[in-house]
Length: 193
Image (cartoon, helix red, strand yellow):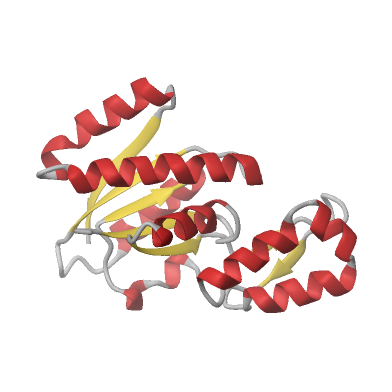
């Protein structure tokens, strides 16, 4: 593969990790991140989420939730998701703290708020490299079914970008073709950092 990819959602749990897992299995050089202040997972009610710091290992979250209510977190898919996540990487990482991971060629966000935060963060970074980065927003609802669909669509887009002679010259056509075929609108930005 020619490019380095980053998958970004709010908590680096569901959407970004589903895409990270699929792309990794397909041989892509990929990392994943969240942009939130904390990692939030559903709790027993909407007002009682489970909140963790970025960097808390997925296995720790798994054990914590299994202790609290194994039936609830198995039924709502959180335990299987955390098990998948721990097979991909150790812990959720925060996008705003990823500078040491090096630069990326293509960054996917899975909601507009996250896309805006990624673009803003890239603009605030030291521009010493003046490296071009393509940031794409593919809007994906934060549930397990939609995350799986979003991951497959992301894989399709990554394969199109990889196949292009020059993504900079082809990106408008790649996006237009995708939007027409999938009936999904994408946001994208070309940034430098």
